[in-house]
Image 1: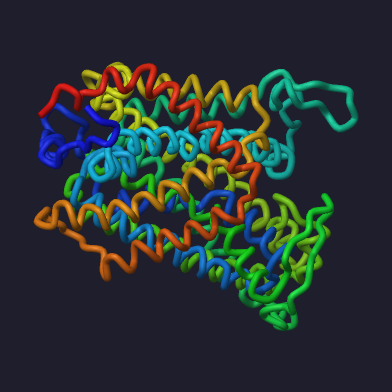
Image 2: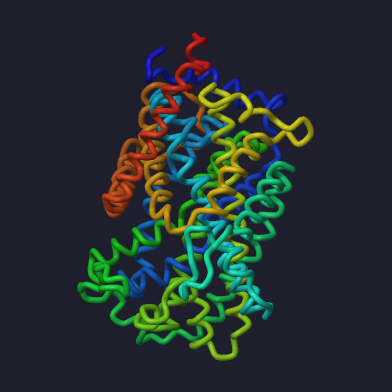
Length: 491
């Protein structure tokens, strides 16, 4: 069997139709939209908006959101076609296996670990930080002791205390993993409550903040092109064309997650119609909220405010200082961020377990990853292994170690999905497609170009980390996966 042997389409469609032995089909189109919104609206909205305004674009960060959304939408159209045509778990991994062969499928499956598992751990660490904010600023009790909410590689700024382990981060990963083992519909129900909560708070900020907009903060809307040097001495293109493009790259991270919807295709009641609605619907909802939120936030406070009082608490600080009488709203933002983090972790853990499930079904990972719980019909062993991996990372590794690796992994997956649509149109033109990406190959090519441009802006250090990660993946592939692949025995 060659490295580029493709998984036959008839095998994929047999797996999609085998609902009796496989994962339980419990999710509706509405639940998928909620899953997508749950994954997308996290801290990115509250943190990246202020950062992009301060460093890159000022009030024209709204244009940056539009550009990033266009890039995601191009990839989203391709995801929608593939997930409705091949409605089984695995997302980009499965689509690549069907179109580019086993080696590239392994590469993208391994690459998705960066987006899902590493991303979930990183968000878990941030969840721990915001839990302390909630305890101190909202509930007005003592925070968790430093040593029990930081990794052993971190020490207090005054040098008196070293971290031991991040217990809150470990706690949230364990809790959400156990929820996923219990069942996807239960997880979707909890996620739906979280989504309603945080979307309501975002809408509150937009509606209540609109009357506090100071028009002078929006002039000029696109600042003249200059260079801004931040507190760390790093230079950023500010204003003009490249400032807006830089803002698009910064706020792109706020869109990561919509593709996780496609990993739940095998648990969806009517995937051929529900998957396109889930993917494109969640993208549309979040884009509208993002643009309105950015418009209000940059209208409430001037750019200089975000530069001097920036960081993770920019939104809370802006509300407290410029929206007189709405201190309660600032506290609700802290709750919304915690809720946002929780749903992001939930969807990332779901996505990772389903990718491992699909890779295990193909023999590229041990069989245990595709074993289903006899009662709950969820890949519980995969969830438990991921719990251990993500939990250890969250408990013992600092959050800033990962950097932009999650984004590189995501963008790379987007590019391969776009290419897969073009290939599948050529190799299997008669495949039933409930949703068809318009203007193929133009849309997929534009998607590859847009994601490629954003990758170019991520810097050589992140490329180096990506290559190191892929090298480790090749060792595992040639050491185990290639020998155990089920394709070598199939005709």
